[in-house]
Image (cartoon, one colour):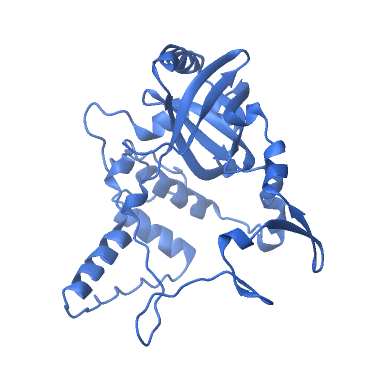
Length: 294
């Protein structure tokens, strides 16, 4: 059983549910390459040093903030501890919102499964999960994680509550900062019709993300195993990139490869039949719909 990344309470008003948080990512599948000295292949070490006193041990190191060039104030760990309150051990629900009220751009990429911590948490956990499902809402929350105050959204998924950590609005770049790099070209009706036909022809009816694999990691694993076995490594020839003459030509070729007739000038884009891509196994809930309903 994996160790929880965080333990505390999921708090809604006067109701507190003891929970444990587990990261959703399987880190054991990651392959980490070490840096080596090119001459002797010894691992490169990173040592903490002081420009005056040389190498330091952890007991010699304190934390500080540079308030001016070369000027620091030291922040003691005891002073940091005094800033913490009992609420730091809780995921405090501020309110409930519709799932589409939070733009996906705010998702930080850190997600956790929340599970009840002990028998006492089972009933209020199940009640909160069921009520959120019935109401079709997610919970906007605050918590302290890894020493920082975070905002997050808690949502019901697959019988569990899942917590997605969000980015603060001030930490995100704004779309208008890229306006100078975007032009507004005039699009012909033919281009629009062909693009719509291509989109309709490649719409996915059933999306099963479990069918998608990390091919780079698989190839890297094969490479490492071959190197360990002393085999010669050869590279597969790169396929020739198709030469695109112009946008209209590329759209026409793509529509033809999709196996649907190009739209006529007067008829507009015809409805193309949806295709199946990586169909879900029978009985499995659709991934896309789970995300939307959560």
